[in-house]
Image (cartoon, rainbow, N blue to C red):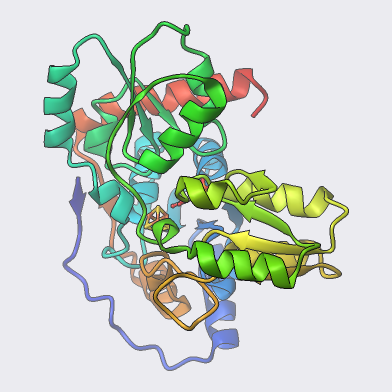
Length: 328
Ligand code: 13P
Ligand code: SF4
């Protein structure tokens, strides 16, 4: 993977948020560009994105994009996945430092050694991984399709699941499988406080608790609904409940509030902060100003080594094919 860092992200534009948005929308049209955004992005980024979604939806959308220029408002592995699926397009990311602690917890070299030690196992990797890790993988999953993809393997298939031990443990618990789990996790989802969540639930006994499966087991046990960001959003729309405690990165609340203005959404707090929200510092690196500069100057192009991309494309395509066959 090569990232063009030759340009500086710190360029100032001195424009207000509204002016920034208008200028981004103007440039987007002029350049025939598409902006993709993840649900954990800042509200104002979600507002200017052409498509907003969870990791599965973003990959499904990327595959179908016709425009030549794509700006990924998300983290680096998402931009890599987009580039792998769209090798002929120019893929940019507004801040090249927008990484992921979960992807960092699984270096490709260590996974290669682990695979060697377990040669009879298939490797299932969460999409939150580098392209190099995906290149060592049999099939990629997201939190929207992990259960179904694991179940698509015969029950006696030996499986390695990485890098998220929480998601892997959750899938083991609902499928009865015994996958070998990589010992990685997301620093944001690890941070939710069980004590504060119990307190919130006592304060709002009518609230439904929505939990992302990247959270540890004791938090997942509190859930009325467990799922990907898209699944939690859909549940909040269709549920009759009027109040929800949301146990995932707080960016998703923007879409929940827009979709159901008559309902109340309460973010679950992290352990080590008096703040009520739990933000991903990497996701929040993407600002309107950086997006504008990135789009205007076409900087921070994300490229993936051709051999790695070819190997990584196979398990991503496999995931997309299985998902399509299951109507996901
Ligand atoms: P989903 O949006 O696929 O649920 O993923 C959550 C996440 O942590 C993305 O980094
Ligand atoms: Fe990675 Fe966690 Fe941030 Fe998602 S929320 S991008 S898993 S660090």
